[in-house]
Amino acid sequence: MKIRRPAPHLARDRAGVQRTERVSYIQTFQDKADIMHSSEAVLTQARAAIAHVPFHSHSIHPTIHLRLSDGALILEGEVPDIVDKSRVAASVRRVDGVSAVIDHLRVADGGAAVGDSELRNSVCVRLLQAIDFRNCRICAHTKGRIEPVREAVGESSGEIAVEVVDGVVTLRGHVISLSHMRLAGVLAWWSRGCRCVVNELVVAPAETDRDDEVTEALKLVLETDQFVDADRIRVQTKDRVVTLEGYAATEAGKRQAERDAWYVHGVEDVVNRIVLSN
Picture 1 (spheres, rainbow, N blue to C red):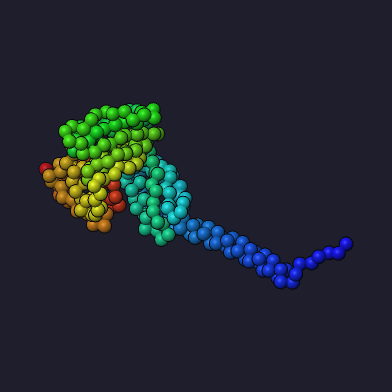
Picture 2 (picture 1 turned 180 degrees about the vertical axis):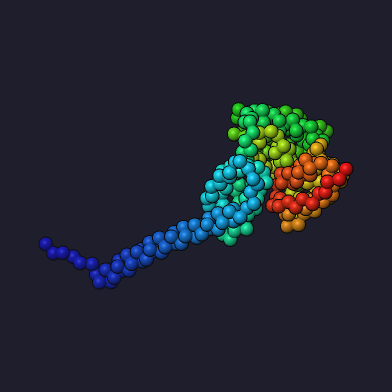
């Protein structure tokens, strides 16, 4: 039986293809190794940034887990309060290689647990009572259904649907301004038992977000807070850092104004220069 050998040029072509495939495989493996090394470097920098966050002196120590997904840094775990949550997210946004931060941190302040239905009702009541949302339709996600709580009063200027799962409040719908979007988020945070707020409200028509938008939203929040004398407090925002100046009658009022600032979406730091004065 005569064995037929491939023509020399065919043998060379096959060898070339095999070498190309081998080089391609090696390159792919190297690319994956580089990505893994780069990802680990980003995570190392992020952990170092978090280590420098000035956490409050709490009995509950923060438990924070990090992972990367397509350049986005995902934060998971628990922190004692909103201040720590905001500071952690702000610290890792400045890390090279992080394209976005997805903050899934939950606030665990050691208080008594609140059921999801009770928390959902509390958020809805706050929205119903806020004069700025009287023209908004308010709905609640209940057992997989969207149930209307109140139709808009007069000409409709938006719709807000409230969903709560394991203490996490999600707001969906649309509102007329960035200030309304931020105020809705703060009202959710004010509700007892809230561990996290996912604010998916869309602003229509769209607005450009700037420092002065943060300032206007915080002024609206302070005016809404019955425990704060908003007329005696001045607000300035620069590069997402809020500065509070003015006067408060009590230390509790001073602290509440600062906490309100931390609740506002987009705030990365707060400088409290409020002076106690009757």
